[in-house]
Image (cartoon, rainbow, N blue to C red; front, side):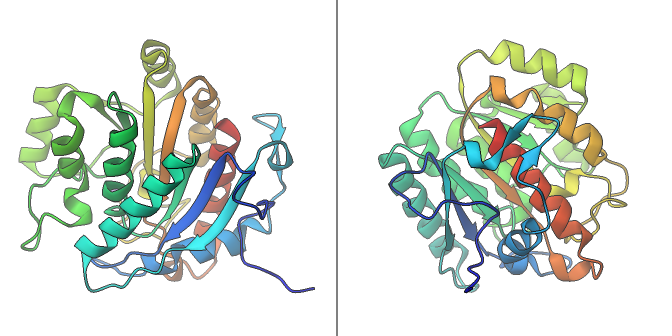
Length: 279
Ligand SMILES: [Mn+2]
């Protein structure tokens, strides 16, 4: 049998799918330890070791219609071009009335997806799970950096539409900004439960940087940050997500070669499985 590297149990036809997985192997502005370009394929390979059924969500991947269309052909030399390609693909998926689910790649990919989502959903709100604020306005001479992605999203949809969870690292000016805007929340079950019940039917874009997890459970990422939530607690938080109207999402910053055990890719694949089941 010929094995095709797609996410576990992905259906093959785009036309019949409600959700479209695609890889965005961008690794251009990665500032500390590179390797996120290998993230999407590593998540797919690791997913083969998982069951399709989630006991926590009491649902299996066979029950949802999703496909995996592979990776976008993204070069590493031009972030602007890469974001534009991601935007075009996301726009096509929205035109076809489907939900884009991007696998990173570095966090900058979120910008291309949010640019498209905000055109189709003017009321779009963004939920940001991350160890880092990513609110710098410039980093290493450019604003097209993974360290600036959320400040770019702010420019696009407005600060008040973004809610940050789990952040435990940033510059003093990033922290000042978070305090002034009062849009940083602890990543725990109670806070998330309350937050979600206030959102009603708002269209949500969810961006999950895997470094939000404790590095003892996921060390395969470019800028691991001590502290952070356990996978078990994150999985409990996911049980609220089926109440959200998620219209697009991404899971970013896996850098598989930094974890020789391969465990980080398995954790990332399980995060993707659980999120798929909440859509
Ligand atoms: Mn991060």
